[in-house]
Length: 390
Ligand code: F3S
Image (cartoon, rainbow, N blue to C red; front, side, top):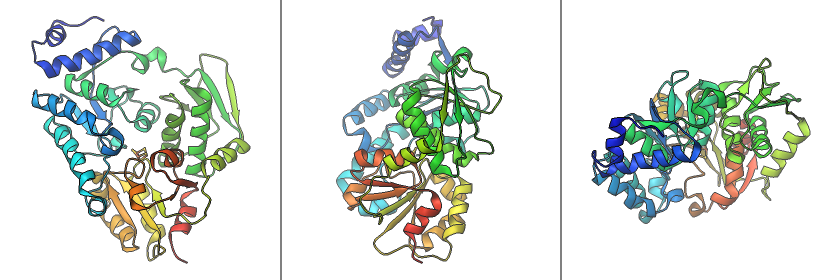
C-alpha cells in the first residue's frame, strides 16, 4: 500500500502509540483486501458498544487507547448500548450497568458522540458519493443503497481505527467498479408491508452471499419500509448494497425470481413461537424514525397496553427528543420508548421475557440466539393488536 510521508510517520510511531496501532490495523486490512492507499472519510460509525454483545475483555483495550490520547478526527457515532437512560437502568442489576457505563466513558474520552443508535443517518446528512467507515450492517446497506454514500461493512475495531486516523483503505465498495450490481432480482409478488420487505431481505441474504442485486418490482417503497430490507439482507448475508429500480443494468446475467410462497415461508420460519401471547412487543429495529414514531403514536393514542405484556419502541436519544410529543402519547398507554438501546443487544432474558413479537425480520432472526426467546414476526398493525387491549 502506498502511504504518504505523514502516514509513514504515524505508522512508525512518531505520532504516538494509539495512532500507530490504529493505522497498522487499517494498513493490515488494506493489504489483505488489495487496497492501494488510505482515503479520507467524512464520518465513522462504531459498533461493539453493548456490554451484552461486547463482553468485558475489550474494555481494557478501549481504556488503553483513551489513556494513550486517542482522539477521533471525524464525526463518529456509536451503535446502541445494552441499557436505556431510564427504564432498563431501574430494572437491571448494578453489575450489568457498571461495565456498560465504563465502555461509554472510554468512547467519550476519545471524542465519540453518545449517539447510541443504529440509524446514524437520521442524525447527520451524508453527502452522495462521500466516503465513510461504518460498522453497523443495516446502516451500511442503507447508506450505500439509499443515501448514495460509500462505506464498507467495518468491524467495531476497524471503524474506530478509521475514526482515529480519519481515513480508511480504498478497497471493496469504496471503488466504483465494485458498486455495480451483478445479479438481477425480480420480486414477482406485491410486498404489502415492512415485515414482508424484511422477509425478502432474509431470503436474499441467504441466497446472494455478497452479490450486489439490482432489485426490480418494488415500486413506491417508503424509506421507512426499505430500512427493513436493508437490515435483513445484511443479517443473513454479506451484501453491502443493492440498487432499486426497473432500469438498472447488471454486469452479469444471473437472474433470481422471488414469489409470494418464498416470502410466506421465510416469515413462517422466523415466527416460531409456541404461543400467540408475547411477553414483549417490540418495534424499532432498526431504530424508529420521526415518521415511524408519529405513526405509532397515532395508532396507539388512547389505548392501554395489555396486562402482563411489555410494549417497547426503540429509537435514538436524538429522535426521542425531536419526537417528545409522540413519545409521551406512547408512554401514556403503558408502553415504553427506550432510547439508545434495542431488544437484541439488551438483557431481555433477565427480565423474564420468553416470547418477543416484532415487525422486524432482523430481530426475529436473532431473538432465539441472542435473547433466548421465541419470536413472532408480524406487521405493525398485528403487533399493536397483540400489545393493546380491545
Ligand atoms: Fe439496530 Fe438493534 Fe436492530 S442495533 S438494527 S435495533 S438489532
